[in-house]
Image (cartoon, rainbow, N blue to C red; front, side, top):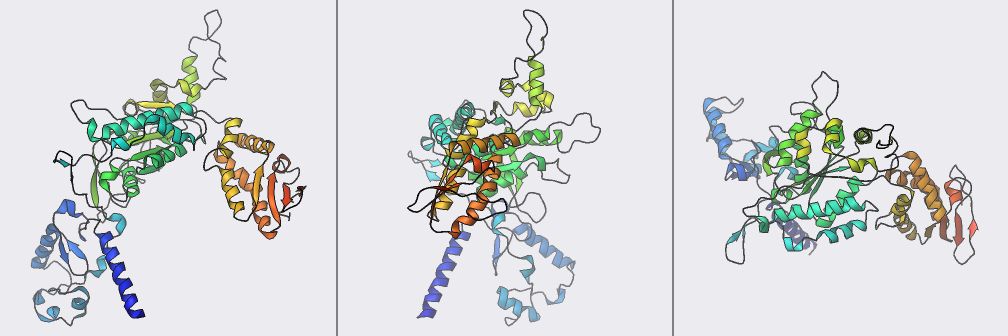
Length: 497
């Protein structure tokens, strides 16, 4: 009975595996091209597939006798046709006695998903262009409301990105096709480090349920040099879409640290990671058919290639742009001096200078005009102040304090923070000048002893973090189950509560 159940289980697993494999295209084991490019593949025993071109080349080499060790005299005859031969038993009928096992299996990460069959529309015609349903796309105010649940502040930035994304996916749908072609809404976001640029894009992709690829511009170099080619950003998007080309062509690509590819000033060497990368990105940002390696970041002979059209891919670039505020202030203060109509030199000291950015400032920073022109939507994110840092710790759905409260709740312990304690944490984060990223490192530091000691004593029911504990002047407030609260200092070396 057990053997029968095991056989049924194995058979079911094989069926599931075969169904999963049927979703992906077969690939020629020789040239690594998918079936959509080569045409119908010849499927041999042992899941070995080969295209007609590679098969013809192989026959030509056989006839010329250029394959080392190949038994020319035994082609189609002799022991190689013996069905008792090991290679014949392992790989099925093999007239030449070849063992293709050395090629290995093509990894799933390099196999493309098959295109879905076209569906008929309501009028009976084939609907092959509708990838997204516009009616299911949330309007801008709904997108902003969802962003408000996860991102604190940055109201203008969330409003701009909501409208830009909404307009972009309207042009992707079939309803936008017609005589008037709508341009892309590629974006450039500028803001200091730790203000939420990456988190904003991550949350946006999760709300829209579209594939997202996040890449770093610092790793990109000009083609032919050590580093990733610009096409690697599309390879990451294809992987995020589970190798589904149609889904990837409606995804979002976020290129972080875009300010690091600015033109190098006063240099005599070739700028392979600056201006050259900007020029390489121009065609991708504009919209073109790009040859992309599948399952790899670089092109080589053993990696299959596919074509991705970037016309409907939304590109969002972000960067801190250090020293850009000085360039902006220099432009704004032209004409400052002494007199009734002069501009005071300290007029913009307390203002958010980055909000006055223009294309002229970006060109002076080192971005080429062609690159700036392909990012029509430019907006800034403001730096985080003390009040925003306090809200970031406690208000969002995935707030870091809620995460620790959840962890201690699993030990049947309640965790609370005094308002003064939150302000003390915010003060420490402002001193580090790392934005919201500094909050976790600070909280991890003083929560270490608590997370270590709490599981030792099951009688503890509540822990309250105080300002004195944050400033190393005292300990947290501990309440046992059914008792009054008391203060228990923690020693710096990880002492007991």
